[in-house]
Amino acid sequence: MVRPRLPVVECRLGSILRPLSGRCCCATSIVKTHGPCASTGRLSRPWVFDIDQENATVYETSSGLNLLRQLDLKSRGFELEGNASLDNGWGFIASYSYNDVEITKLTSETVGNTLNSSPYHMFSLWADYEVQSGALEGLGVGAGVRYVGSSFGDNVHTPVLNNQARTFVDASVRYDLGAVNPSFEGVRLQLNATNLLNEVEQLYTTGFCYFDEGRKVVASMRYRF
Image 1 (cartoon, rainbow, N blue to C red):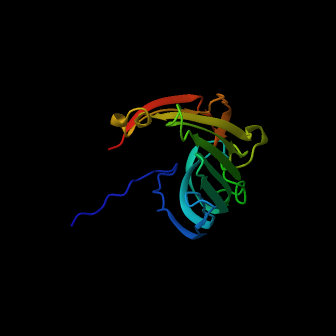
Image 2 (image 1 turned 90 degrees about the vertical axis):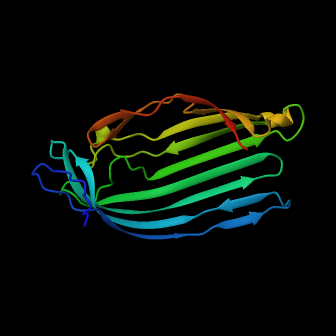
Image 3 (image 1 turned 135 degrees about the vertical axis):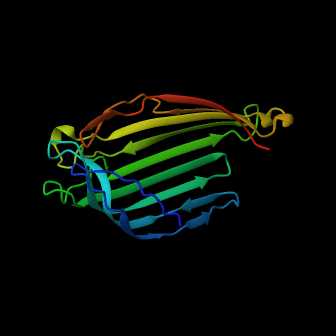
């Protein structure tokens, strides 16, 4: 008989961490509607969740040392997402999430606090337009914003380590070559840019300091057959 080998992680005292367990109570629904034209559709996905997690592993620095510890968490919140595809070439996607992550077991200084680097609010909006006819048919452009709310930099909520809210701008442009020449049907050229304005801030999480990813531009060519 072959016995599975579980990963072993040691704490400061050399003890093996307990296995992760959890309970999730979630509810969701899909609402789809149609506008005056058959090709117009709107889809929304509300989702509510209540999650209890036991024996998660984190690095904890409240004692002055960087120790690997286990903690229990309670996460409650909801997410909203909707998109609309219009028959004039326009499309929209919007989403919002609220997440309250509470520490229910860790150290006496942190129980009841919000888990570090866990923003309550996140929001994103994306708009896309594709030219339907004329000389620019096949050209598509898109732009959007992403908002990440403020969060705590450590589990004891040291004010100087708090992470400020941040907003990022993304954009894309694409061109379907099949609109110019049918022999290139399925070939698309695309350019994606994230954090277009190059907004880079420090991000603290449990004693560590990181930076937001700066501006990134990726060019690609896709062929579908």
